[in-house]
Length: 66
Image (cartoon, rainbow, N blue to C red):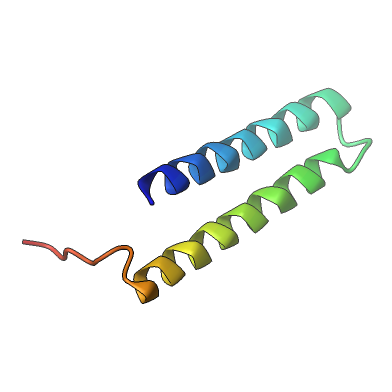
């Protein structure tokens, strides 16, 4: 589960980086920045739902604050 979360974070950061790259390169003349940011939002929502599902199925357990 840790590996899946780490991969998801890397993909989210990569999408954010590509959005910055397209923003600087295209100067707002194309919609590639919007597509990259939409992909980032989709990946973030998917990660959140994956974490909720993993908790529901018992793959991860809350530890709380000690």
